Length: 399
Ligand code: NAD
Ligand code: MG
Image (cartoon, rainbow, N blue to C red; front, side, top):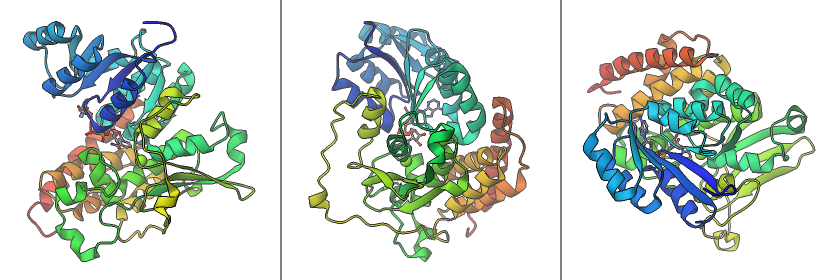
């Protein structure tokens, strides 16, 4: 691989962020080499991507060693296929790869994202759950290894673009009064509150502006996604919760804002298309074509904003409370949310019970410290057990 060609490992290649990343990469063939493509268990989908992008390695982290598959990949794509979740960490820390896109969904993405940070890589972080779970150890690994952390979440990417160059140093942040994360409000922003008891997984996943994986789509409908993003912003930009606000902006054109002490407010705008933050992070500090449609404000006409209604979106309130409680509370919140969302997607829990299961889990599982990976994984496991029991108890009952 030539010295000026970035060598990219894509964790979560078969997902929504994975597809957008490969779309941007394919627009710039001389610039990025695909070092590895990783997926959980969808062998045919990954094989198809490997045929197109010819990575040196492919990983199926959810499957055990399988000689037939390994042979099929080698013969059809020239890629060496690895199995099991440890392979993700090996790839993320591999000396021949310099850039890691961490786009696995959920807490399952933490270990490999952390491995990339520890190896001092350029880490393109879509997996917000890694920072929610392990913000302190993750940011410590980034500092100690000299990794470059670039946010992919559109709101955090927007904040990053609006901060002074050099980002989140103490002097730069002294000039920032607050950051404002925008949220679309999801599909139920204006639905009658009584309707929320009955909404189905497909309705919750029908996001008005973005096409995303099912878990983050439900998080957007409950606004837990914004809650997780508030916690993510706390770690990425080293800001306390009282300097991170949320504003509903149904069109998803203004991706976030930074307010300075002199009253200036800077915002980043684009059409809602994840290829914009992905292209920004891939090319940073340069700029490349993302493939996104140019923004035509004249055609859009008006941009609207409103404050979030915490009665409608209790998950947002729960996330702020967990952030203020500190320690392992955000990890407990995140684990309970993953369990509750999964139960909702499988038809075992009502939409409105998601917040109740999370609140009860936070009450039941004691908050501990979150200074090490072991401590957060222990909190994650305890919270999953508690949330699973709480969700099962509600099954069939009127939530
Ligand atoms: P997705 O469900 O579309 O894809 C998830 C990917 O992770 C798939 O490639 C899957 O194979 C892999 N995966 C799933 N479980 C795994 C496991 N246990 N171990 C290893 N790999 C596993 O998800 P997505 O929408 O692309 O989201 C990915 C991440 O990016 C999430 O953390 C999400 O919050 C974040 N994000 C997504 C968007 C978006 O527009 N989709 C926007 C901002 C942030
Ligand atoms: Mg986001």
